[in-house]
Length: 103
Figure 1 (cartoon, helix red, strand yellow):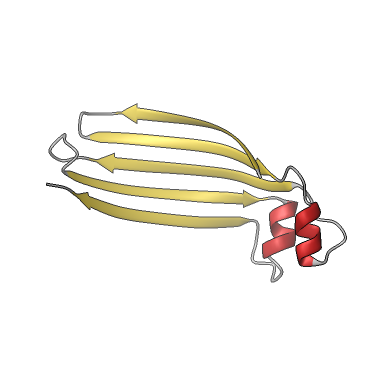
Figure 2: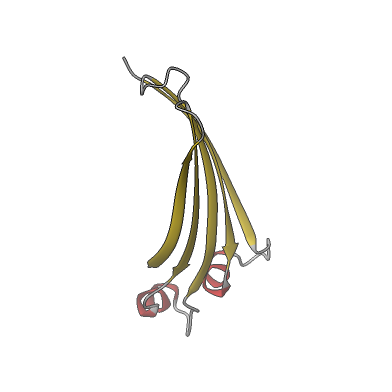
């Protein structure tokens, strides 16, 4: 698997950071997948991944950290060939929220 990406971090305040990422993913070689799946050909393109994350540190320290992130994968032919046999579409979403507490 190969990933080429670009990311940015924006420190809006000492407590708030917004991070963005844009990645393009593809398979370098699909021969192993072809053997494992018993398929004749699998396209190399996986797709584009776009994600945004917001981090909030209310005390401007690492003791309490809230993070909320969302991502979307714009699936290309290689991903759809492997995982989307039911025709659920071209976009796949993910949302994650977490809280880190340290003392």
